[in-house]
Length: 157
Image 1: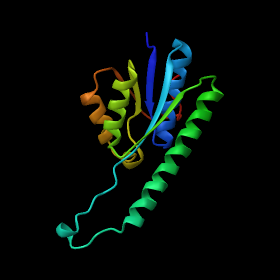
Image 2: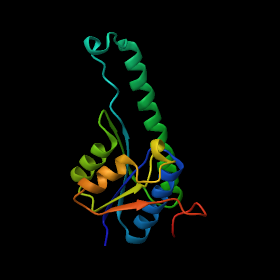
Image 3: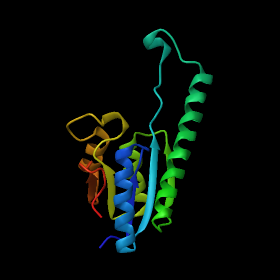
Image 4: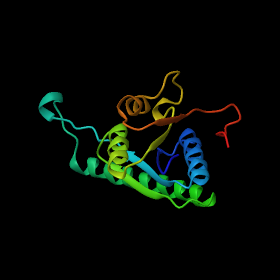
């Protein structure tokens, strides 16, 4: 059925449920699993538009922090997958919106299923789908499985 699954994670609890679901699917189907995290673009300020600029050192510090956070997210996700007996490929994408990084990675790696949480860190309290998940759903050329929080907090096994 599925031979190459991509799961996106931002390290949130709900993304962890999506990861668990993707791991279970990979284990049952024998599919390859790719775990991706995407660091969004940093805000760019044109001093002529707003009257001031952001020091390059501050932007560099933000980039380093985002990179380190991505490494931690992937390390935790890898441990979770390996605990279930799945060795996953890990990818960290930087400098693009999350939906774009997920879609580009999906196309480049030839996945046949994308697994995402219904909301990311920014949208846990929202009643509608998160904006990044919505964009992936709208633009993906392959099926997208959206994992929502279950009352007991675990994906279906």
